[in-house]
Image (cartoon, rainbow, N blue to C red; front, top):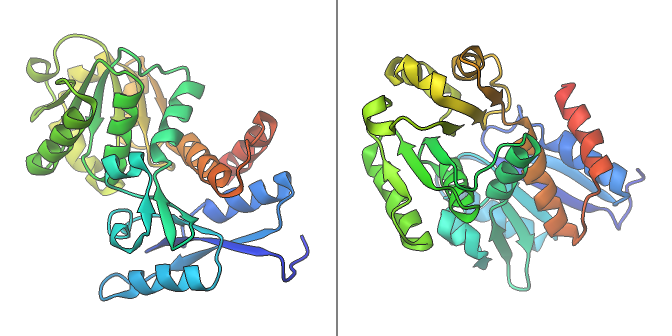
Length: 285
């Protein structure tokens, strides 16, 4: 690609960002879709007003859009001109689109999760879901479960207060009582039916999760996804596979949430053959 005065700049705001696969993902999309853009990462300081300055400065400099990652998915909200309805309900933003008076906040994590599950032939409709975590990523996963018709969503988190907020918010938005808190990962609270497990806790919490989950529960997990994309060798997914279930890391969620963001920025539909080529590039890293 030849950089010119017409080249648009996009980027990722987070801290840290050095590990991110987003530059590979979006640069590949631009190459294969024939768009004139550059994509890079912006490591923004945590605290003070650095995030506010980064968002305002990016808009004034004409940056085409941003992705937002930890720890800013919730913190960025006060600095946006508008928010998409799904982002409002989730309470977290991972994509910024230029609007007339500032950036508009979207959440494509719920789209990415659903598309990744669908590609793996894991159905959310009428499913009983065990959702581990209650942070921004878990809220996006919960929204996907509610939106796609999960029968029951059992939320397990180290902080019951945060889990209660998620459950109350989702039941209030979707109606009914499909979302429930569980305080122990055992048969008494989870029941006897098969489970789809979605793990949204950080890798740092894996050793804690290993201690608190009843080993017998793995036998009832028919399919599991850990949203972390370097997690296939971690205890949780390995144990699901050993017990006979299907298990996937978050690489395809990363792909699909990124494609959804790209489609928002450029008002396009990314063809399946391009998705497959980018998936191969990500998997090879």
